[in-house]
Image (cartoon, rainbow, N blue to C red; front, side, top):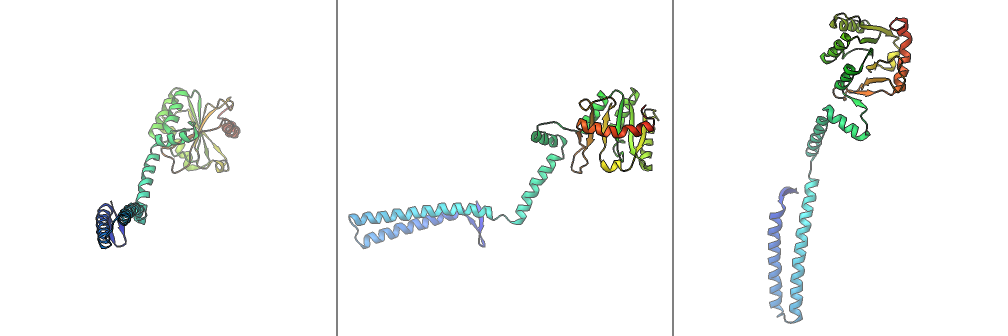
Amino acid sequence: MTVKAGGRGLNIFKDTTVTSVVIGAAATFFSLLIAVGIRAVGYRLTLVGLGFSLCVIAVDVWILARIVGGRIAERLEMTDEHFVARLTEAESRLVERFNHTDGFLQTLQGVTGTAFLKTQAEVMAYERDNVQKEVWIVSQRLDDEFKAEIREVIVFNLERGVRYIYIIPKDSVVVERVRQIKQACGNHAGVVWFHMPGDFFDLVPRHDISIYDPLGKTSDQIVAYMNLPARSAPNNLFVILEGDYAIGILNKLIPPARRARIIN
């Protein structure tokens, strides 16, 4: 293990071994020299031996302290570049994990203990297998309706009699998108839409909301999803709406839907 100490590289094991041999030899030499010089006998020889032992212990303590100090120095020697590199590496691993929907969901579900989030694939699977009459789509822009996997489900449901009701702002671009959806579905009569006042979309400016077979449902029965309007949310995640909240939105939609003769 090598660390930087001052302006040179320090190899702890090599340097401490050499140093301990030198100091141990010097201690032994000086101990013998003193013993000969004072003609040590009896207790004097004992004192000399004790002094030698203390010298060896001191060397061992010094070696241990140097090893520990070297390891601390190694930790402290981390430069800003090293720190940034390690932090970037950790961040990359975290981003890689969260860019996979499964990992993202597992992490959130592990924290909350509930599966309140759904992927777009799961929402479309529900829409395909469980809807009987109507799908109400609230959207300010309809950005995702042209995805192949979504259009496939829409066509499948239209063919079995499900109606798609699009609630959109009175915007020429969005109206044209609905018409394009209708054309992509063979101009099916089951694709209809009506407008909501602009201030309604001030409440849900970036949320796409799907409400399934909502008429006549209670708050415990209604099923609705809202996409997460967050750039960091991978693969377009959806949250399950609380029943009371979904009913509240539906109650806002029913009067203009009746005026547009979408429902009786």
